[in-house]
Image (cartoon, rainbow, N blue to C red; front, side, top):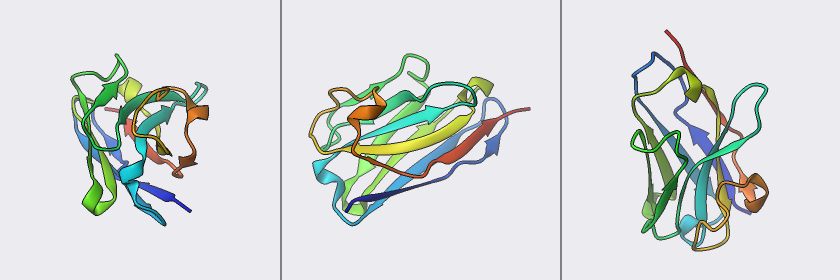
Length: 126
């Protein structure tokens, strides 16, 4: 049974950077498309980014394009989300999630994912 654990969340000032990690156990990640989603207080969970199983294709929400970068190291069973130029509106709990497929077909939709991590808090504030 695939288990996902996020780490790297913290409180940072606007303009700062963070790198989130999503490490898997119980199965290898190379068969899964992996997404990062976030949920801010009082808001619905939204898709942030997705990476195909091979890492060959990546997808981003418009709100994070050119600021966030998703990557993966299948040898380490880990997916990363590098977040630069952070804004207060990026404040949320960030989740990584996995879908057993090569592609990120419905990546922005929460029900598409089969497995979830517990989430890590990112707070951006002066």
